[in-house]
Every structure is written in structure tokens, then in C-alpha cells.
Length: 247
Image: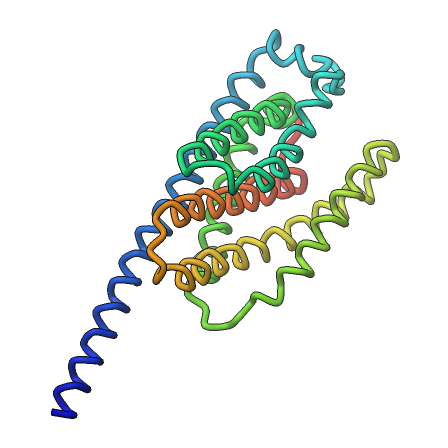
């Protein structure tokens, strides 16, 4: 009887583990799918505005690409929206969170539209491909590694804050050396964040899967998609600054 109970217990545990694995795969697929839709929306908006002189002139001077008042608002709007999303997440439904994410992706497209004037189309496509390959490798490593990299989080976030402050200061200084250093550090920091966020999404799902809260899991997938989306966008922009060919 003891052996039968042991087999039954192990069988139940194995079935539960298989159920969690299947749920995790579905969860990660939703994260990557949502992120991909957001990426497509961002680049569609950026291309539509960036290749139209009349639309781009609404936000920036066509000759110098310096932002006007509306351009400054659009530039900082994604950052404000991220904080607003975090504050409002508990009050949003899963559908509301997804809609907010797509709105954020569209606004991000407006803020990035200038790259289609500043850089050649070939170099944008080339850097996008490099970013996609690097991102896929880093995210796969973060998902499969047995190493606990949760300790990276606080250092990486401090690095992001440092880059943000330095970038704002360099808007007024215009130092090429600082610009180059920020780009190098940005690539390293967001490469680390890609692996860290992927592992965190995986671990968070495993920790909460037993509760069966479908609404929470759906919103968690949106949050995960937003985090990986921002990792990809920032990695792309810093690589573009380093590798892109200017018009």
C-alpha cells in the first residue's frame, strides 16, 4: 500500500509539474506575441511619421531634427506612461492593460520617428536584425540558465537611472565622448536586463501558477511583454547610435 501511495503521489506531482510546464510555455508565448505586436506597432508608426516630412515637422524641425514643444512632450511621454501604468495596474483589467501597452507602443513610435531621417534605411534594418539576434540569444539564456541572476536587478536598475540622468544632462552639454560612453553602457545594461527580465517572468509565473488566478496571470504577461519590449527598444537604440550610418 505504501508503494502504491508513493507511486500515486509521484504521479500526481509529475502531472502537476507537466501542467505548470505547459502553462509556462503558453504564458511565455503570450509575452513574446504581445511584445512582437507592440514592436510592429512602434515601427509602423515611426516609419509612417519619419518618412513624411509634413508629419515629422509637427514634432521636430525638418532641417536640424531638434524637437519643438510637442516633440519634447512626445519624447518624455513614454517614460511618464510607464510610471502611470505601474500606478494604475491594479485597477486595470487584463484587456485594459493590453490596450494601454499598445497605446504606449504607438507613442514610442512617435518618439522614435526621427531615426528614419537621421539614419539610412539599410543601417536601421541591419541594426534591427543584429538587435533581434542578440535579444533572442540573451532571452533564451535567461530562460534556460540554472544560474540565479535575480541579484542583477538592483544594479541594472541603478545603471538605467544613471544612463537616464546622464542622457538628460548631455542634451545640454552635447558631448560626443559622453554620448559614446552612454551608448556602450546602455548596450551592456539592457543586454543584462533582457536576460534578467526573462528569468524573472519565468520565475514569477512558476511562483504564482498554483493560485490559478487567470486575471493576474494575463496582466502579468502584459507586464512581462512591456519589460522585454523596453529592453529591445533600448538595446536597438543604443546599438543604432554605435553602428548606424547617418544620412
